[in-house]
Every structure is written in structure tokens, then in C-alpha cells.
Image (cartoon, rainbow, N blue to C red; front, top):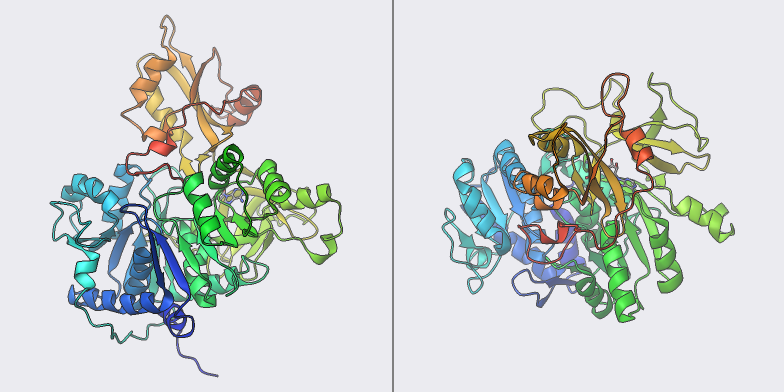
Length: 555
Ligand code: AMP
């Protein structure tokens, strides 16, 4: 059989040739207006951009960063960069500025393609980014901001005079195509480098009927950001199928999302629970409906029962829970009911749908005990979740050690069980990070900062559930003897030390914090002690006012 390597650019070229009139609709970052285009135009413009990048001396293996929302221009950048053998490094703008600086320098990005929104951020950082030679602002000359960014140019001006003829090189399957850093652990973010092969196989698996089920008959609103774990493979799966693609730009609030779902007759969408919570509250307040939406893929953190039930009963929308990680490209499981479950009672079905789902073929998984013994699939045995497969990380970018064991298994850091039907259920996280609105907050980092206050004897941070952001940090403090530290004082103290949306929503002062036998804070017991504690909807979650964003958006 033929054995030519298959490169990611062939996906967009395929869409350009066989689905040329299928729409790509973008809410523009500049002013929120709606921009209509199609796969034919996108393929043409991608070749123009590739010519421009070549003129700028982009070489195979170069890292080219993007700091951008989901837009057609960002999509074209993805394909133009990897199509010529360079590596598209998607940067999460919600990271703390120091982390953004760290990952750009660690990746040694040569060029950054950025939305106009992020120009001020990069102006602040550029003196500390020695490898970055130039900045391409994803806009036209009308919207190009005044800037002192080095060699700054508007992307439309850059590609304007370029030929739309480009000879894509044939790259080996193993050529790196993408790079995404995960901030899921303490310490510095770690890079996961995807190849043409891993992204392609992942996209096939995502597309499958038991995966996201992307076909040419779906209209897809891709809310999950392209900077968050490959936008769950949808930026490849949609053009592969020729599915109309709707891109929400920077506006991810309930009203903007609802407008797109309705006006673009969206049938399928994907995002973290926070987005759907915001949408539901907007729809309830304004008595809106979802006449076209059929299925939504939700992952990133556990999907609460009320979300599954409300979307199902009130709006006839089926929730498909998914589980994955940046290290898995990211999809590992999708929760679709098996044929044998179709006539189960509603409650029994919900019990299954609250699980993270069954593995999509290509991602093998197992649970093991502390001695690495494989545990049974009985829905009861709980252990460390290990995964293996062609789109699972083997070694972090620029690390000198493998991230997998001798047999190739990657320890996800999640704790889970698997039932007799093959459904995975995440029961806990091995580490005690807090996931707020789809983004990690490190409890350890917060604790370390709080412990820096002169009147704090001991500080612990745990995640408590929050109606909008799923989880928010709660700071627990033992005051030093004879001091009278107040909540406002400690929060003010922390305010210039951590990202604003990391600030704890509340502070509880205690006389004692439970410790483990090895002298560490026992988060388990602390959570138990505070199990009655609850944050109200009015609590001061700050994530909608991250300094790098313009709108009330959250992935
Ligand atoms: P990230 O690499 O930022 O996408 O984070 C990956 C982690 O998010 C996983 O290791 C899980 O702990 C968590 N996660 C992702 N999806 C789910 C889900 N459906 N339910 C519970 N946790 C999830």
C-alpha cells in the first residue's frame, strides 16, 4: 500500500478542495462583528501566510508562538506554521505573566502571532523575550494598534501581496507540529510537543461516532480555545469532515455564545463546564431556548449533575462528558451510552453519564495500586490512572527523562476507577490543585505566598465548589500568637503576589490545621472538616477580569 507521510496541512487543503464553500464564521476580536468566510478562502490565505513566513526565513523546527483567541486567522496560522515544518506553539494568555515569559523563552519562539488585545501585554514583556524577532498582529491595517513591538506588522498587510501558490514540503510523520505547555503541576509549566502523526491519529479518533462524532452534517461552535490542549482536536476534525466551523473570538460570555448558537444554527459544541453554566444562567434570565443545538462535549473538569440534567430536560441537549489532558492531545475518554444502556432508567443512565466515559480507541488506560498492580474493572477498585497510546506524551519538551515507565505507561496524576462496562470515573486528583473555570490554581503556590505574611503561622488552601467557576480557592490560616490578622489584610497582601483570579474567595481562621504523619498538611482531613463550608454565587470570583482579556470570557 502507499506509504507517503500524511501531513496536517492536507486536512485544510482537503477542506479547501472538497468543502470550499462550507463556512468558517468568526466573531472578530477587534469589535465583535461577524466575519464570514469558507474553507476555500482559508486554504488560499494559509498558502499566502506560508509564503510570508518563508520570506521571514522560518525554518523546519522553528517554534512560532500564537497568543490568540479562536479565529479564522489563528486557524490559518496553525496550518501555515506546521504545514511548512515549523512548530505552532499555542500560548495560553490566561497564564500568569511570568509563566508566559517562561514558556516563550523555554520554547525559544522566533515569531509571535498575537491578537491585538495582547499587544500591551507583549509590549510589557518584549524586553525579556530575547529569542523573539518579530510580532505579527492578527488584524488588518485599519485595526492595527500603535505599538513599539519589534518589527510589528498586521497579518493582513503581511500576506496581502503574497502568492496563493505554495509547495508544501513532504514531512515525515514524526515531524513536530505543535507545542502546548501544561500548568497542571507546581513548578514551571511543561511543554508537550505534538507531531503530525499524533495530531492526525487523535483527530481521526475524536471525529469517530463514539468520540465527538464530527461529520459534515454538524455545525460546530468551537468554544474550547486553540491554546488549551489543541482545542480538543476540533480544529483538525472539523475541516477533515467539512463541518461548518463557528469561532467565537474573545467573547465567551453567555449572551455572545447564545447568539452564535442561535444565528449560526449550531448543532454541536465543546467547552469546559464554566461556559455552559454561564450560558444556562443567561438563558434562564432571558427565557431563551436552544432550538438547533444537539450535543455538547464537556470536559476539563468533572461535569456536575445539574448541568447534564438541565441541558437535557430543559433544552433537549445531550451532554457528552470527556476526559483528557494536555499530555494526551488531549482526549482519552468520551461518555456515550452503549446500546445495552439505552433502555435503562433515566437515573441509571445519569449515573453513567456522570462518569468520564470509555476510552476512544487508540488511548489505552489502566488503573494500578501503589505497587503498580493492575486493578480490576469493577467500578469499585480505585487507583492511579495510567495511559498509553500514539497521542500520549512520552517525554516533556526539552526534558532529558521519559515521562513514562519502562512499558510506556504515563501516570496521569488522576485517581480513578473503571467499571465492568469500561467506563472511567475520576474520583480525585493525586495533587491538590484547584481547577477554576477550566484553569489550574496551585494551592501550594498560594500557600507559600500566604505563609510569607508576618502574622501567618500556617496556611493551607483547598478548593471548594463554586456555582459559576466549579471550584475556587479557600484559604485557611492559623494566625501567629498575639496577632489579629484580618481577611482583608491577607487578601490585600496577596493581591500583588498572585494572578488576580487566583486570589482566595474567602479566608477562614482556625486554631489548628490537621497534619499527616509525615508532617504535611492533610488536605483530605481539612476538606472533611470544612465540608459544610460553601461559597455563595456572589463570591468575588475574579476570573472574568483577568488583566489580559477584554471580555467576560472563560474557556
Ligand atoms: P489539562 O491538561 O489542563 O487539560 O488538565 C487535565 C486534568 O484535568 C486531568 O488530569 C484531570 O484531572 C482534569 N480533567 C479533565 N477532564 C476531566 C473530567 N471530565 N472530569 C474530571 N477531571 C477532568
